[in-house]
Image (cartoon, one colour):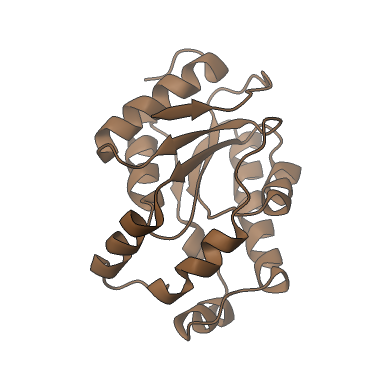
Length: 184
């Protein structure tokens, strides 16, 4: 089920989209599919982390706001560049707190936040089957504790991660159409 949050009609074609949520909800899978579907550049937020952040998370230590600040600024810069060059883009980013999303919006005011939401048990199960990722499932509780859902004054929508990734892409495109006009 999709829950739309107020759009604040900021015209933007092609769109800049942040696929957000806790670790394990399927941000990368959906973001890649959505970028392919819309013909937009894709970026993975994990690629913007400095080595110290990855080492800290790999050791099971949650990042603090000081750790996240340069990471969020780098993601925001990527979004801003996609706006400036007119290419649009899709990036993953947990963006768990409003102030983190504010940092991204400061660089890209027209960003649309697509919050992937799922129950703790479902996400924990997904994390237990994931291999080759530095983020341990032991940090999931800290992510849920930090999560501040989109507020009604934030441009975006919430999608429940129960449906298949392909269904979620179709739902996302339908949500973006009123904001960005005709999309592929």
